[in-house]
Image 1 (cartoon, helix red, strand yellow):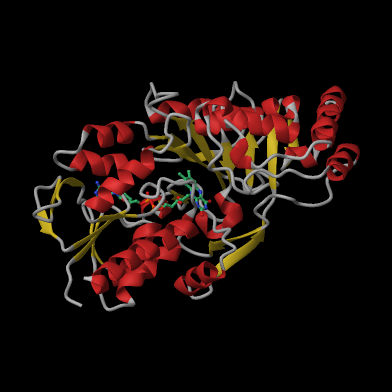
Image 2 (tube, rainbow, N blue to C red; image 1 turned 135 degrees about the vertical axis):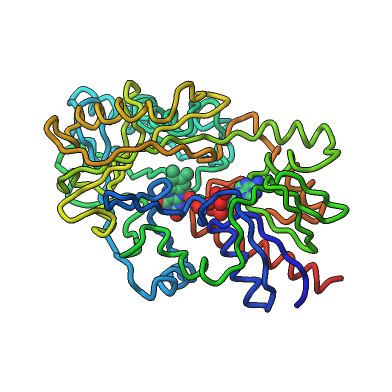
Length: 441
Ligand SMILES: Cc1cc2nc3c(=O)[nH]c(=O)nc-3n(C[C@H](O)[C@H](O)[C@H](O)COP(=O)(O)OP(=O)(O)OC[C@H]3O[C@@H](n4cnc5c(N)ncnc54)[C@H](O)[C@@H]3O)c2cc1C
């Protein structure tokens, strides 16, 4: 087919679209604003011998089609690991999910949580959609003490706004709610099993998470350093920040919805207003490389304490040893901000020192550790914030883009709390929509 198809982006969604189109004989052109390919799934080797992903990434997809696509992408050369996860709560490490492993907590807190959990368990949990906000859901699911001290507190750090400011549309299977017997068992004896909603995960043996994309990079007509800045949907042209212009017959975008609106001329006020209500968190990722690899028994750890800026710790050398020099370990720490709720008021680098101090307080690092590498990376778009204000705004913006024959996809096009697998499939579906539109003309 000779149709001139352009894809904005080179992350998972773009590759899903690329895959679907090329399998139908369409050869799209890809443009990315970054100087490197891969979007959030890029990995960065450094001169000290470490490989850090853009933010920590593992593949925990249960979708067989995706497992096969990713396995083939690395010729079967991936690690399969049993997830070990825990939580830092006021001086103790508690296995994850904490509700099923209360044993490590102070006795009075355990009794209070159990007392309330017994009460809420006696009532049937209403359908998720019936709750006005996430806080109400948490109270009904766990009782106030656990809700406010654990998921409520963590969520506020991760999403940058409180649970009472969030809707419940994003919840899905993310929060584990065990039955009463399981909670009681976890309170009276130390943990014996793992119960995270992620059980096993995969990670490429070489190249960091980006290893999954190397074959795609090699197969595509991809131009980097091309930030789309203006789109003329009548003339079907895109103007890039580097001064170049590209024409298209078909446009698929994985760029954030609000950015797409800023690129378009004569956008109606109500659509602009809807775009302005879409909030996303930003992340500072602090990467630390250490001359020691016994940093943690868990692959990743959630940090609940409000006086610590660290939100989640991940340990890349435990995903694949090739991410570090021999005998070395690494920790990636996520810290979250957002323009709307918690603006970043300092340079990302200013998070490095306090984060290292926190790692030392938690016993992950030792005072005498040889820290051979540290850096801070800024992620402009991290997690979509499902706050009460956002309501149907995304749908309004998406409808407008569709009316201009612009096909959106991915985490920031679908405006959804989706992972790499669903982003790839979103790209595939977007490509299918454009293929269907051709055949229906
Ligand atoms: C900190 C963090 C940790 C995560 N961990 C995991 C994990 O462990 N496992 C998992 O499965 N998922 C994880 N995710 C989610 C995962 O990263 C996303 O679901 C997925 O990568 C999104 O892919 P995408 O292609 O939709 O978006 P992106 O990867 O963001 O790709 C969008 C692309 O569009 C480009 N672009 C944007 N604007 C323009 C423009 N104007 N012009 C040209 N190009 C443009 C960007 O540069 C980017 O390359 C994590 C996300 C974050 C933030």
